[in-house]
Length: 384
Image (cartoon, rainbow, N blue to C red):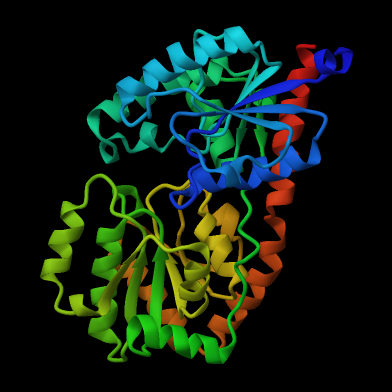
């Protein structure tokens, strides 16, 4: 029993840990917690879910899953879940720390906490998110930032943004770059041909990966692709991987205007293996959002030996380094020029792929998990 009492306990917000529905923050949660729970058998982890969970995300004997309903599908339910359900549970269970990988905290809880705030895009582009979501984020996130004992974020850009926007101490915000799944690997030439036959009738294509959300800039990417097709008479396609999210009307209107709309292919959400195939068979990735806290698809493309056309804004130059062609997200013509360069300039594609091979070694989930755990340990030690 003495051992039981001495064992440190970490409660974790795992409401986004839903296999088959993992997005950027979900993957961060999955990849880091899988490693942290394995590396620290001396710690008891309590995973807090808001709905039925999958056994595959209970990563070890040192993990106890707990369901606190109801499912948090609405900003009002976010308030109820964190300020009532989570707060009461933390008061009863008395863990040594509360870790939240999506940045949401319980303002009423007294438990020391670490919040992972991936970015604060809603402060800069509030019109991209629905009214109540925007109200919630802009009211609560400054308070979460001050409530947390430590904040972890995924790029130096986001780190500076959080420090400046929320007026928090520099030494409170830690940096832990995202990784990319190890299953992303280059394809053989034969496999590239097979995948292209499956998705684009054998044609080369540009690929975008991400939710089809306003800040991902799909409308300007579609405009750029039409401008590209006007100039390049080859059989190139544009493949968009991801689920529609929030506001998509301008994107649909742009599609209707395009004379080459048949060359735009929507795949919906793909499994990691399918995504590896679609990425690895692409001519290049076109990832041109207005705002990005990190940009995991860029690293996934590098791991697949695929060159990148990226926005020159927010965190993307920091992540892509010298391994991308940078464009202005506001300008379809600039995006088109990047796409044309990667088709026409002899040797450029190969040069970018080689630079991507060197660049990608900076990003690994092992490193991310170590950095996140370092922040957790600091808070546990400070509050022991």
